[in-house]
Amino acid sequence: MSAAKRDDPTSRWLQQLIARVGWQKACVAMANKNARILWAVMTREQGFDPRHVSAKPQAKVSLKERAAASAQAAVTCPA
Image (cartoon, rainbow, N blue to C red; front, side):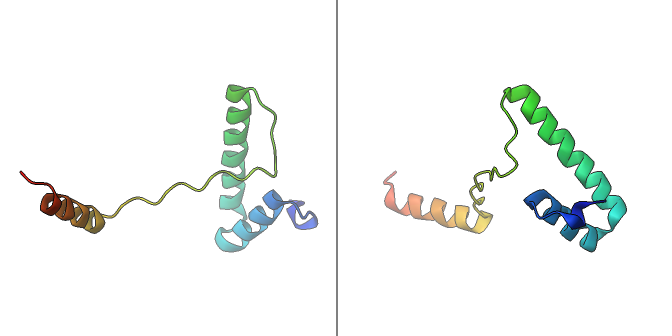
């Protein structure tokens, strides 16, 4: 792979992945990433932006936090 010779975000990601999981799994991950990019470009009919950073999804509320919110709502709401 020539990713080691490049300094773009995808190449850096690939190099880190190779170091972590090995070149074979990294090769499959890169193919998966390319397939997802291709699908997104084809379905959205927009150009590909290699520097795009998606919005971070909001954290899910844990069961403990959900139970506490429910208990608080039961105390404040008259039945």
